[in-house]
Image (cartoon, rainbow, N blue to C red; front, side, top):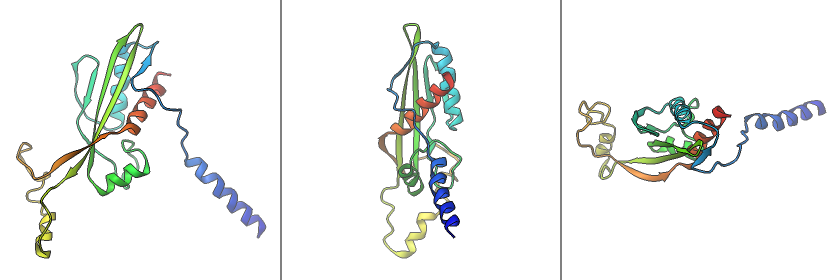
Length: 183
């Protein structure tokens, strides 16, 4: 009996330790890479953003500037995605539709380069859709006028995106991934 208790306590102590991640510390944003060429750093930054499932917008349009399309945030059920960091943000993405857009600027600095990562977060809002009676509440789930069924992407919608500021956790994660590859 005592063996079982000791075994259970030992497992209870070891299991959470295996799930914990140790952060290598906060990186300054922008971060300098004194020994790496700006083109190599930009290539790594593109690869990191694509690993996070961001779609790049004109990656070659402006030298040193990598911009992405908005990416809808991961929910509880999308555990394989790494673009939503922290339990609070995962809960927020599960309860509200959120999206993130990343901008990475790579500039030449002395013999190396400097990377600036900016991730903005927005929440979807549908103003004036409060049903005034129970029969109108079903209109909230009507898919005829939804964005998914709409053929013309430029058509006017009743939804709007509310700016929620910068996502510093994802910015740090992107910088950590760039550092890990360039190490």
